[in-house]
Image 1 (cartoon, helix red, strand yellow):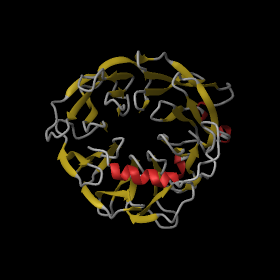
Image 2 (cartoon, one colour):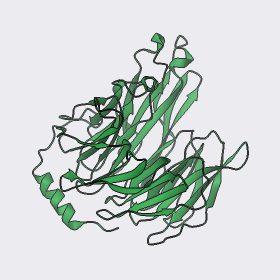
Image 3 (cartoon, helix red, strand yellow):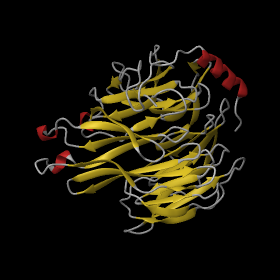
Length: 420
């Protein structure tokens, strides 16, 4: 899990030759980065040097069995690399590094790296059944956890190396899970496991650097079975924050068991930077919908969670039917220094004329949770959660499907770019 000095030097030389973008306020559209639209899904990642990597699926005009890999420094896209397969996610590391995983045509899980200005040939990780959780360290060492036909598997990939796989023991066959890896190489998997008809246990297991066996599962607490998927992030210090249902847990140190911190709303999102962590969640009370947040900040003298802050809110008129204000979907990204970007959309019935004019939004927050900007970012009806990718350089990349009612075949999938 070491940093590649040669790669970082090469990236620095490339950056020196890259023109600086025009100035824009944080959260404004990034100059020179036009919006991308397609009939499929987008995944985007921003490397430490500012290069944007993307996976688009399906490729317009090529059928459902083809996806494309893209990469650019400046918003001008070269001809993408088209490959057979389905789905796909991309992550980034230091320099210009990127790594993508996708399902191959034979239901295998495969990866490709972006090195030397191009995407490499595929490397097979294992046999895929469904569901993956894919994350990287700051440098680009990767872990992917997926459901194989015979159980949950984990793959570890040091940057520039090859995949090592092993089963994740103690996890039930069904249910939600999530994974993270910190910069020291510690991998953690969390999941929610039914313990009766009214509760789920939130559990955690750890694979320490260099180990080949997982720790015995630890139970963090219990939540309602309708609590949704767990989330987990590691900050730059290696400390984990976990949400499940309406609860949040956090590590005090990288080796301690996460302890319960406070209540959040269902469907919370997490993001972490070098020392900071943010959680956001939707809140609803009748016609009043809002987005709330808390931010963990560390300075040279203090650390801790700030107060609960409302960063967006709207009270809908009585004339707006419930189908036009069902709930809020979110996405969250954080730059290494702690500035945050909250994408949100109110889910509405796209077939109803009463719901016309609904827009997704991007709210930029400083470390004190003070909004710096709030902009509309396109139509939004029966859409998906948002992807938000940001790093120390380059734009903020925001992806979302505006209308899930078109079954992925309409031109409703956006990839947009904003200034940090």
